[in-house]
Image 1 (cartoon, helix red, strand yellow):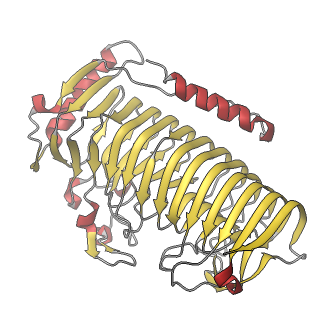
Image 2 (cartoon, rainbow, N blue to C red):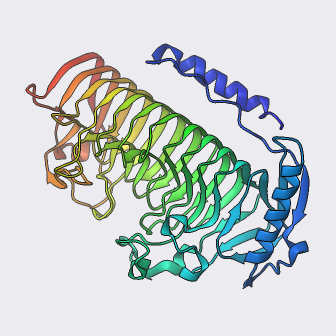
Image 3 (cartoon, rainbow, N blue to C red):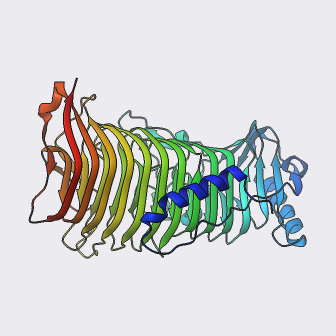
Length: 476
């Protein structure tokens, strides 16, 4: 098993040294990612794949994977084998990736997901075009693409938000989000996805579930900008995850850690470019267990509905999170999308009347630059306080350039929904401990009247605020 390039190791070490003074609890650095070597290679063409985009190649692809898996299992531990996809369009139902197998989708090759419910397993939680369960040393690479044909699932096109097909009538799942995901790794160890494009998912795109040691780099993700629920990368209950040098352009949340069955820790995302009609980065809203030890560094967020979000609804706690070296541009979109152009957004409240409130502690925003149509929103709750937040070297420019209505704060999901509220540079609720150092606010002079004040808070719920070198000014 080869080691990662020296440049990646140097970048990881530099980031670790930079963040070490801010660490709140002892944690090891992310482990070196598995980089599968070339090994043996099996072409899907040799197993009968047509690659014409019309005939289903499912059986040929699965046979090639099975043969490759058998070869890797017979070799030394940790060895991998590749399944090659030469240039062509390979239409398929669900295929199952197995231990020791790397899909080598070559430049000019596209794996196309089927658009019929019969193309997928009976259980809705296994609706993926490519699925690995309980596997080790697996991955996808090659310079080609996996395409979910998401536009085939649009029932009505709408520039505000598309209305999507839902397979809920089958009884396999409920609600309006019953569509197949694109790629899923469930309960896997040593996952490596690199140098591949993941396009047009009908639902979530890359789904990492209860995995350990996942490395995602040089991946391009594209989803239709008007399609809901086509998240870029969802990381559920997974630990030791590294995401770097990725471009994500999609309608819904771009990088989204969640906790359903266990805690999530040691996630690092660096050197990424993001555009979305939802949150560029969002912790939650699924948050039954804790998040800790997460780092987001050197990220560019462009024309998104929300920049950096922490959305806790189910009783899990958040601790030791760093956002650093991030450039943000946020704007309003149709209010059917969660978000009101907040560059930074932290909320805690109970999803339901019977839900618990989780707390957020030790979150740092360092070297952040933002152009935004709205202000920062920091809203804890009585049972879920925001504690020990730090803003250092933060520059925010407030200006309006769309015609959408302002003067609303967004507590969704659950809580209080959309609520009318005066506009402010930072709105604060239920906070104990906030350090603001070297923070500059600039207001567009021609529409500065739309903002009521730089800071909006009540001393009865917000305490322990300190200011050092804070500045607010108009600009033309």
